[in-house]
Length: 318
Image (cartoon, rainbow, N blue to C red; front, side, top):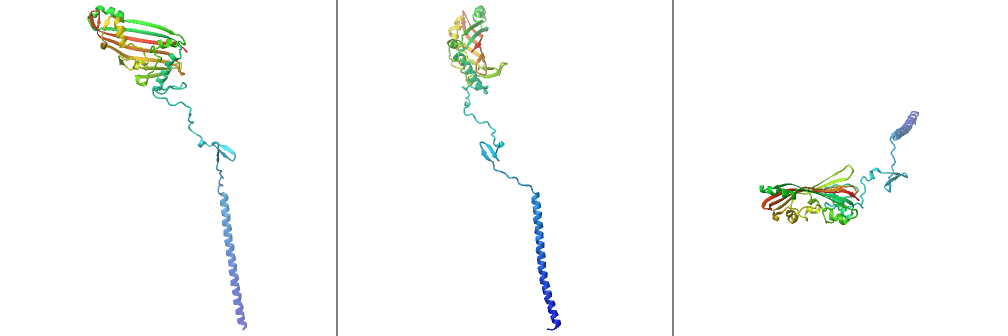
């Protein structure tokens, strides 16, 4: 090999080696660059993570005796606190419409409850026997005769009919027999057994002493019977009494079918304490008595008279 060829071969070998070494260096530089990039990304991620809010660690509460226990400290859960009072299973049932009695600790609400309260309190006047005074006033007025000839006897008739009578009856404490005999309805073991279907209306108010004033208004009726609504609370004039005593007392004769007793504006009013004791009681009856074709002495005439019966029970001592 000539000297020139040998130089040429050495140059080629040197170039090949330089080229190989360059590739290796380039590869290492690339790897280093990638590493630097990855390191930059990692550092940036760590910075971002450090800036992010730290999530709170929650612990699922455990229910113990209607409270939450968290980290050994009981915490009341307001969302689970009952907003409705528990039902009292011992409370009395809702009263029915006619014969229920309201609690003594609360005022009645419905008309039916007020009527039941009225009945229960009044009946104690006979069953419990308090001391009281009964005052009954009967007034007869406004007598009219249809026959002008009746003027000759009108004075006699008026003397018999026009009257005002006041009877006072004391009843001693514990004398239940006297109470039964003298408190309206006389002779019955009750004072009132009215139902809502027996009355026209019921009103109530509270007086200055905190007592309840309850008024029962009776319906207008003609010739009411003792077995009807009026007989459940009143003592009153009946057709039988007119035939048996009233007409004969004034010297009149009249057929039963010609007797008309018109009842209007009749009421019973009781003042009752909240604990169910009667403080005062009164009844009022307005009656228009009509005797058609009545024979008085020698004439025949219609008799039209107004009667008022007012009874008070007062000075009640329990």
